[in-house]
Image (cartoon, rainbow, N blue to C red):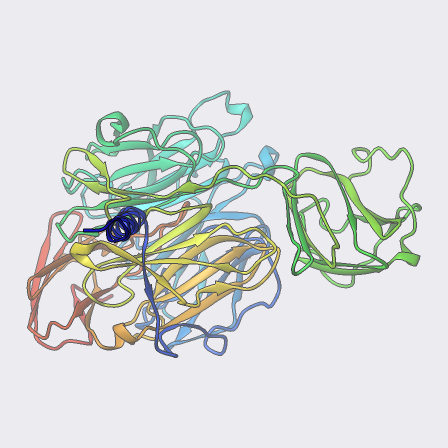
Length: 632
């Protein structure tokens, strides 16, 4: 063999090895080739407020009025909670329920009267206005009836996490009620666990260890497969895993079950990705914005910024006209804008809670005030300082963001290294990291996660909402589960948020029109709510079954928390009623959608309730919804 041929073969082998090395462990990709093979944003079926608002957590899903279609509760942070009634696959315009600063939401029937109760966690005014959670009963005629406090009222707090769950396996719903720790508590725990006395009365039972800052974000799951609920808590420092003892007490087993210390977690969801009958965990991770962080796109001439907790100062070359988009802070500085050297008040027409678009001409904003003590008069100061330059400065305590258009140049900023999400496989006694093995390794700053079988092939997929960078549209990530070969990243799926100045945050799945295809609701912090309809070609070529889980036959256990097992052909899947990737909330989506792929055989279904009762049923008619259990 001559030297040239040897060199050519060596180069070919090297290229193959490099390609193999790059592909192994990193995300594999699947393109959508058909012109209609994607998700489509729908607006007629989902009327919304066309204003940019702050958000809190994922939308909460439940059939509130028991009409057979899942409704939505959405939380625009600091503004209020609204209900979106679902009328046979078309949502009504959002209707205000409670206005003000609200956080976690949970839904369940705590007194077995056939109506759902909704409990809402109220903010505490940064510690100055501690309040307890507010409970409503929802009737089938769509009334929300405010309920009085329990005999011993729920604790006053800066409310955060609320989750109904059956923590003692007696069939009724207990409550996790966690707070942002108040300074006046001096480190005393405010992570309260309430027991249901059997009559719908919630009574304080115990507490979990105290947390710091946002460490009360919680996933309710069963990681040791003993039919007793466990907790995974995150949001500050390392993730904590608490084993449920069956009596509403919990034991910290983090070191025993987690493979290593895990931090910087923004969301967790349970997923049986390998269909082996136990629940694995997917963790989204990412860096939050840093004080003074800026972003600039030289092609679009778009500049974005983030600041909080003190003074800020940006000087940017724009020209004669300053065009600002989606400028946001919050009370008391939502509308405190001072213009030019005279610092005259900028006047807004109408409300000022939403993002603000402002256009200023240099002749109306000349100069900048001398020796201003921004802290004495907090707010935004904006002035034209000459030579095409504008200065945006001031003092703001709450997080603030904004977009500036037409910026000619801005220094490049270095950013913290992006993080990778983590997929942990449940091995019974301990989780094992299989992120690279399953091809979901990818560095990014991610904020939320939801799980569903988007292509109905019989394996659960993963959808991730990215944080974004304020100045570009924000495209979510979808990993399609291909079974034994692992996950493949779906590109061109069109789940994209286009509003600038928004931060990716909230996501949930719902089959809103009951066509057997899982759709997606996305809510962006400082942005809009979006509903994306699933029109993937593959899902249309696959069979499915939707199990509507009712209460147990005895009437002693609700659907929430029940495990649904579906056996079809050679596949076995499990899902848990109410499972969600929400950080602070707990819905009651009891319409469990199972993709069956090309399987056309009869399906065996088993429902195991939290008190141990079981129901089994053979289903021969596919591509429909089947009720198992008692419908209230």
